Image (cartoon, rainbow, N blue to C red; front, side, top):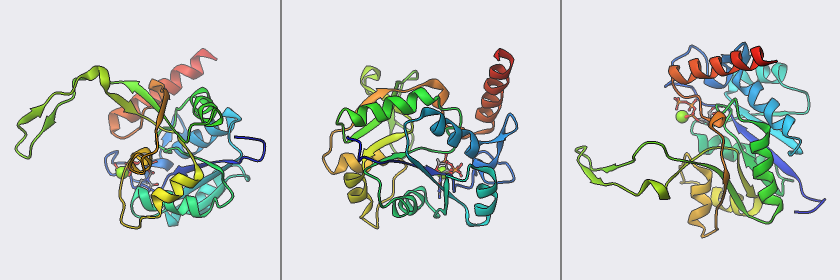
Length: 227
Ligand code: CTP
Ligand code: MG
């Protein structure tokens, strides 16, 4: 990367939050009084490592997002699958040389983690993902739930966001209209591009279930007490 480079963060926030089960789309659900989408965007801004932010939201929440977020943040309509939302963000970020894709649902992601990902892009890696060791044993099962294998945990990692990419391979990966994936790096891997890992952070966990929301609220309450 050099001074002409432009790092654009895309924030998929157009999901419905079915597993969370609140009565509004997940990214707009508050954690400790602040909607997840605002917490995620604030973390990206606090990193000082991104030049521009594009959020992708449900069509009926464009105005709410504009009202909630700093004027410099661009708000676009997402799609019915996460892949469609990322594709909409990519289309709105034509001048990006590097792209971060960061789930709004990872609302407590520390700015340091964002900086680690961008630093690895600056060091020349074309694809960078935050990774944590896996704490549970993981098994593969067949359609009947019968165990078919137990991969060695030492060689497994749980993957978080932001995931960082040189824009060109990410655009190439998303050029296939048929693709579907919850993991952007998986698409780039299929192009044969080496994906570099940096240390993840437990606070970058994805708020998915009601228990996650309770945990995130407790973390925020603890942060406020510590100030
Ligand atoms: N997302 C998106 N567009 C979609 C689906 C998901 O932008 N069509 C976003 C979500 O808003 C979230 C991130 O992708 O920030 C990760 O998705 P997930 O945690 O699965 O969120 P939801 O899809 O909202 O939740 P659920 O699957 O439980 O409905
Ligand atoms: Mg989902």
